[in-house]
Each structure stands twice: as structure tokens, then as C-alpha cells.
Length: 289
Image 1: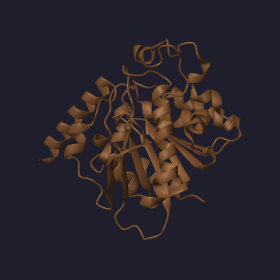
Image 2: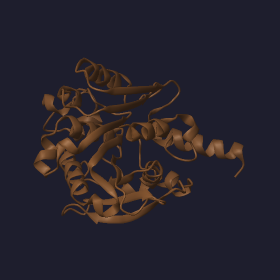
Image 3: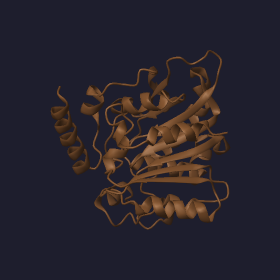
């Protein structure tokens, strides 16, 4: 494929994702080259009873025997109504190549469930990770919660409102960092159809907004957003960053002028990594003492 044709194909695909609000990335995941310094080490492991309660695990190819690596649990987006973990292998492999063990979990989606059931699924996946990840070389006491779009909401709500983790049997104190990519953290669920669908029954519940739960116990947080995002407005990240600063919690925020909603997750891939140094920032974040 020539460079000019490749650019056209990528541009059309990015436009398609942007128009559909981060639809599944099956085609992109199938054609993009994966990071060679990583591998999938487990697939379709059950963390619960539902068919959607399954997870995949990725790890560095050259990991040393007996060494425990930082663990990243990555939640994908899709407006809480679409998504498949196998479509995010490019992201799992990219994060694993940084020197981490990475868990990517499916969870139940709208219309089969509504808030907070998908959050409870995510919490159960974190609990499984903390209890089992040492078998795969991950450190259960050094867990990062990460996600893009709706998945960033899931990750940040779990890390900030720790009731869900506690109810699932997870240990909030072993969550050492939060990574949010283009997430909605401060919104009125009545304002948009997608949130009215996902949060039906909780439309007037103030506890749906992660920003409400920023506290003195909030783990260090790393946030990314594209300034050209029309799906989840950048103000979400600005409001959360301001709350973290006010609470005197460690927080880093990175905004990218020309990136759209989809661009920030596609920048994790080998093909579009030049769009933004998001992986470099994550690597530095998880390697910080």
C-alpha cells in the first residue's frame, strides 16, 4: 500500500470512527502491525458468570522470570453500548510493550444493562486482576486503571468512587494511578441521548460524575484530551484537572490541538503513534517511583 493510499484509508477510517462515536475498531485492529515487544499471554478468562465477563492479558515478550511488573487494567470506550476486547489488541500490546502486564476486559453493555451495572462489571475485573495477575507476572499492588472515552469514565469513576471496588472485593489502596484518555468526567446525563440511555434510572443521581469524588486519597492521575474532540468535550478533562489541583493531588494533563476523539486512542497504535506522544507519557507515568 503506497503512503498516499494509506493516508486516505486511515483518514476515512478515522472519520468513520469519529462519526459513530468510537465504534469498535475491528478493522483497524486487524490491519495495524502490533508492537513486537509484547504478546498475548491469556485469552477469554472468566472473571464472572456472564458471557461478557471475559478478559485478555498482554505482557512484554522479554519479561524476566519472577519479576513483578506494573499492571494496567484498560477499559475501552464505545458509549457504553458497543465494544469488544479483541478489537483492542493493538492497545493492549502497545501498553504491554512499555513494560507492563495489561488486562483488557469485556463488560455488559446497553441496552442489556444500565449504570451502575457496567461499572460493577469493571470493578469485578479489577478484583480478579488483583487476586490473579501475579500468575502472569503482574504486580497486584501496583495497579493502574486506564481507559478511553466511556472506558476512561469507567476507570476514573472506579478510582475516585471506591465503593464499587470495595463491594467487588478489590483493594482501592493498591490502585497506584489513573489514566484517562478523552473521558467524560463531569456531565449531566439528561443532556445527551447516549447518556440518557446508559444512565436511565440514574439521570438525577449526582453520583454519576467522577469529578464529585476527588479527594485527598485520589491516586496520581494522568489525563489526555484532543482539543478537536467533538464527541467528549475537552472541558471534561479541564474540570477534573482543576478539581485534582484544588485537592492538591498529583495530576498531569496533556491537550493536543489537532486531535479528535478517536485520534487519542488510535495514537496508541504503531501506525498512528506520531499523532501524539501519549504512550511516552504513560511509560514515564508508570515508571515513576
